[in-house]
Length: 99
Image 1 (cartoon, helix red, strand yellow):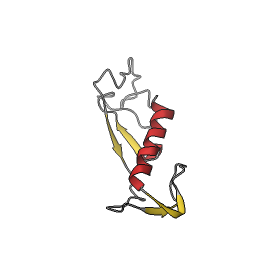
Image 2 (cartoon, rainbow, N blue to C red):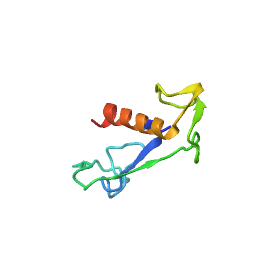
Image 3 (cartoon, helix red, strand yellow):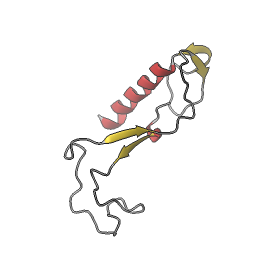
Image 4 (spheres, helix red, strand yellow):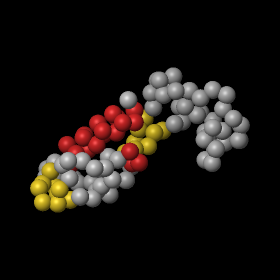
């Protein structure tokens, strides 16, 4: 499923000198950032989907309750379309986190 924790942003455009892994407000030399650019300031960023453990290939209907996000489609007995489930979960994430 396309849960929030399985989507990563490439932040190199926002932090060209890289960032400190333990102090996100500092660069790799532990210098505090004076101005942190926004995603729109840099013309956008790339997002990547990671962790494809529940992925299916070519299957139109699946069953199962495994996944991080609740949705009305998940069922052990009634087959559902995994692609429509991903669209639902992405829409739910956009609505709650990005908007």
